[in-house]
Length: 486
Ligand code: GLN
Image (cartoon, rainbow, N blue to C red; front, side, top):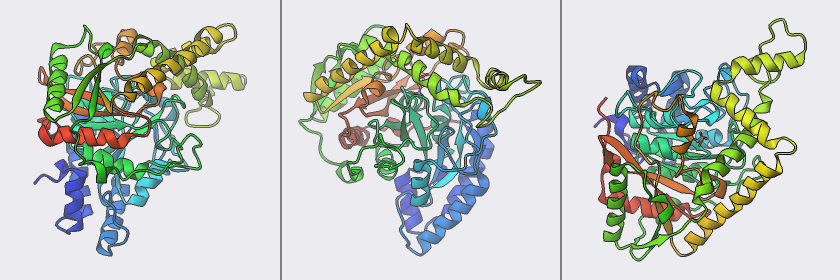
């Protein structure tokens, strides 16, 4: 038994029956992280001391049988845009390279309360802007399935850490696919919950009206377990839902026979890699065999998904990132500065990478007087149409099944000179975020030796059905159990 490959469910059972201790499990994980991560580069910071201290406390909690949860003693990794008190939180940006938050994100507090053990903070595209981690201000993470390939992004570090067995679960963030696309490229399971299901308090904002924190794990059951612990209303985030968090793992085994699976026809068009297409078709057949009814549905405004997403992203991001000006957080460059404007300019010039600067400029343009109505306001209106598309399709189906990315992972460097080509790779993931609906990513096969993922898209707040349908698939397939040979 390899401790670093265990699921949460397996590890938790071994901890509760005292066959292993959390200190042992954590030490194994830290050792592997130090041995293997020089190749994969998934972590920006490995938190050895914090992890060992939290593991010791978890063991005491288990010994006293004091409020033990399924996450007590379980090592996890967290995307570096989620605030951790006393631990660097960089967003993989030079501008926050040495920034140490004075407070925890709500998600961090909830995981602490559950007794989970933080192994480290993971690499990402700077401020979440990208699909490959190549936009990290520090280094590029590699795909554990082939080190010459990208792990996806922006939560590429969190996905690679899971796939390389350097954490038992990880926490990512998804604004337009950043949990699902890297999960798909690295053969793990992950969910973008309904907008407002998980508190964003302490998440460094990219697009405040799309951002969602979500678990990434070895299987659907583990994702459900983590979401149960991090979701819920938070008085520090007024966009969180008041409604109680369902106990997802207790309904996960409900039968899916006679349930309706919608296949959006706009998502199955020319341009998809042949191996991706055949993996998805095979998955649809599997669901048919499991007794689901398959229906073709239409999401007629799909073609506006990318432009709406990117326009709104540029606009909100340019406004959100205005706070990084050299006078409040992180980096401050003031060489021979004449005045405070000069400090702003020098700091932002040096601190932000090219992609971040590009998006800030495009956003400032879209928001400027004279263009606001033509771009920003128009995009907000089309956003409503995207949302209605999902609501209409989901009125006649329980869940939708769709691809995550038209291709499997691409080679490092392949798309870096063409930002538009990089944006196009997000075509299947971006529409769900402006619409706010939840989407679960899960492994569905391989194409040319690289993992293929698929997503199940659900109704607002209906993560329970996504877990149920996803879990049923993982009971009869074993793609999610395959591990890379590092
Ligand atoms: N690839 C998308 C982008 O570049 C995803 C961002 C995200 O989900 N954080 O915007």
